[in-house]
Image (cartoon, rainbow, N blue to C red; front, side, top):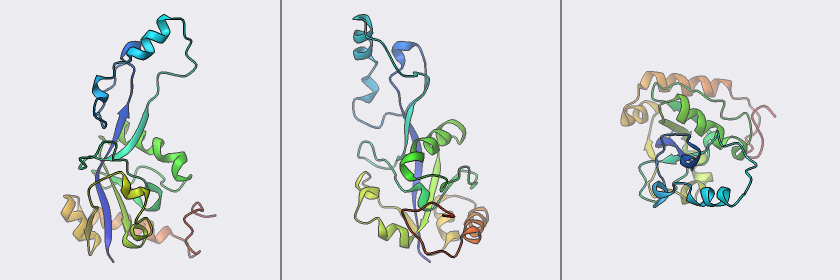
Length: 186
């Protein structure tokens, strides 16, 4: 089995909350983002604009921090598993469709998983996404190995723990034909 993974996914927080006095640590992923201090929002508020959103939330995405391209978003987390640095799955990757969950898993990774995770999937899935939007955002190739153990070792993760997670995941899979457009169990 050939295994693929995109390393060092980091939930990158895009927040422009300085003018509201809400402080968050964020890692700029686009050139110039660190200079965005909310001046446009402040000017609009000074002119009487009303806000209609909650400013206590954030927009976040899983990104490939190895990339040199800005906004190197990693798509596809629900076509495999995502583990934290302790090799634990922390999110039900298949509970909803990709675009309904990409911010939720990124927020969880940012808030509770030390901002680092690993998306692990197999070669079959990676080939189905090529060429395509999963790869268009990053300029780095996924890490690959011939075995799960080899992949874990390459990434500095506990091979036994990663193998167990993959085995448990595969054991839970049903025998229905795989359909990218359907949720697990449907």
